[in-house]
Image 1: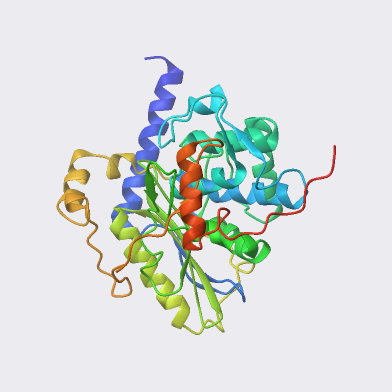
Image 2: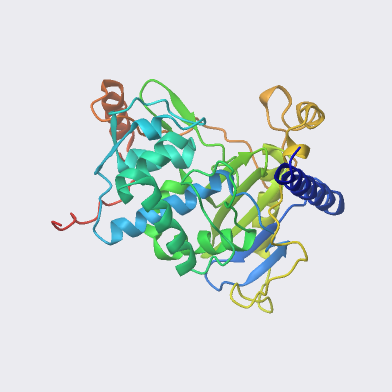
Length: 369
């Protein structure tokens, strides 16, 4: 073993130790979290809010924000084509398995990444909007810095882990609040119950939509290194809050934690709480990116989940604020341009009063370059 390999091994063991110590100290369901009032920016609750974390598919919120900024600048439209390249098609799952050369609208592509978390479609969006994946990633980082995400860096548009990709609960709260305040016209994208290609239906993994009173988004994400994560949003009686839950141990756990936090945010007086801008960084090891792979993806951890909340594929939820959805899911249309099944599904949606573009007005055409 050479010196370089030894140093890399020592660094890996150090990070693994920190991750284990972090969970031992906080408990399996108590990773970083954040709860913010959207209108006042008051921080109602926070825990390890500045601890660096792998963003997983929560990255796609940053991808969507960068797209919305491009639409606002007149560079692209929701009905503009997004082409699946060979590079995009080669991304690992989760994916749609579209073939190189196949095309969808930007509207469909956004629905797909925000519901299915398709990594191949995320890269196709990046290439179609930015000209290249690298150029789009540079724009993601520039936009993140501009809105004050001071401890985030992105190396791809989908969230698969890699060296140099990280965020924090605080930064994700900044992003969620900014999305809601700057682009309310696109809120429907984050509240979709699912989409259909006409041949297959894809339900949203956000278990609060339709099941928590007032839930209206936003995104879930899972990788072994980050655990089960969720950015959630809810609005009641004119009050809107967003929550961030990172490092939960199951789909059910992140839903329960998110629901309990949202309920607290919607019913708590936060008059004396600090604002997002007033909250100062804290945490001794906050600059080390936590890696939960050895905790979340072991055989023992999978067995614990199978005997608990994830038994038989059914989530066992404990939050009293989540209720059963006693109706069929509402699916919007998303898929390839020219696909007969997609066209048929679009007709079904129109008959049911469901818009082809999530009931979102298409912006004005972009000017000629």
